[in-house]
Image (cartoon, rainbow, N blue to C red; front, side, top):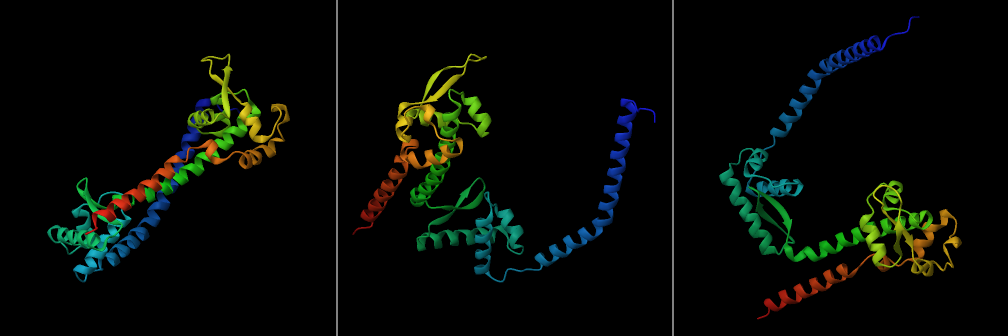
Length: 261
C-alpha cells in the first residue's frame, strides 16, 4: 500500500471529522422534537402554578432571595410570581424587612445593585468570621505541614522546587515558617535569577528531637512526625480567632447596655 503524504492524511482526517459532525447532527435532529416537547410540557406545568395570596407571595419572594447567588430585581420577582406587578411586589418586600427586624432575625433583606438579596445582620459577623477563620486555619496548617515535610528532605531547596512538588503557591507558607523559626534562607541557587535556598533550623530539630538532619526518619514517617510534634500555634497565628470572640462579647455587652432602662 502506497504511503500517504501529509496532505492526504490531513484531507482524510478532515473527511472523518466531517462525517462525524454529520452523524451527530442527524442524531440531535432526531432527538430534538422529543426534547422540545418535554421542555414545553415542563414549562406549562410550572406556569400552571398560581400564587394564592400575599402571604404565599412573601414566602415565594423569600425562597427566591435565599436561593439566588446575586441581587434579584423586581422584574425577576415578577417573572417568578407571574400575576403580581412590580408595584405590588415591592410593598411585600418591605413587609418582610419589617418582620425580620421585629422578630430579631439573624438575617435581613437589603437593597443592593438595583435588586434585593438576603444577608446576615452585621452583629453576627464575628461568629461567621470565627468559623471561616477556623476553616482557613485548618487548610493553612495542612499546607504548612506538607511544605515543611518536603523541605526537610529536599533541603536546601527553592520555592519553585517545592511548588513543583506540591502543585500550589507556597510563598505565604514559607514566610509563616520563617516567622516561626522553623526554616531559614541558607543561600542562593546558582541558576538564572539566583532564587533563595531554604533549609530547616535548629528549632526544627528541637521540635522533633533530632541531633541533626542526618537523623531524619523514613520519608513515610516524616509527615506523621511533623503533625504530632509541631503545635498549630507554632505554624499559624490564632490571635485573630481569639480577638473575634472577644469582639463579639464586647458588642453583646454594648448592645445590652443600650437596651438598659
